[in-house]
Image (cartoon, rainbow, N blue to C red; front, side, top):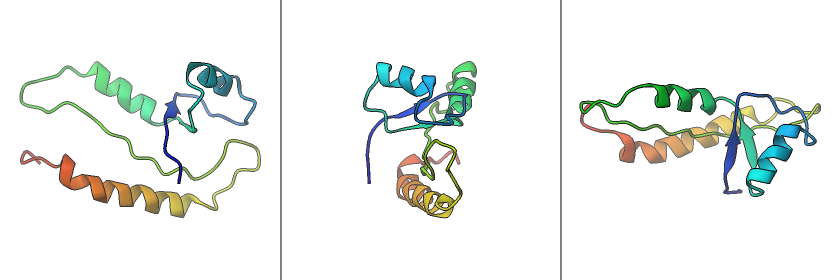
Amino acid sequence: MLSGPIGSGNAVIAGRDSKILQYLAGYNDKILAVEMEAGGLSQAHHDQPATEQRTQGWAVVRGISDEAGKDKDDDYHHAAARHAATVVRALLPYLLTSEI
């Protein structure tokens, strides 16, 4: 298992020679993966005003299922989903509040 930062954006990375990967490596050379869904979540959260009645915050748990490239397949989707669900289950006691 690897642990490290994950890059996020709104573009699909189709290969290891992607200009986006080069940019991210210039920004932080320790990025282990890139995902494209959490960027929209973070933007929506940023655009929504905070209120005193509502706790602000969000978290993203990802199961990495494939590598960027033309040979990618769906072989590890089930394992990635299971790993992400295991992490969410472990985090739930720390995230739930009496407001839910």
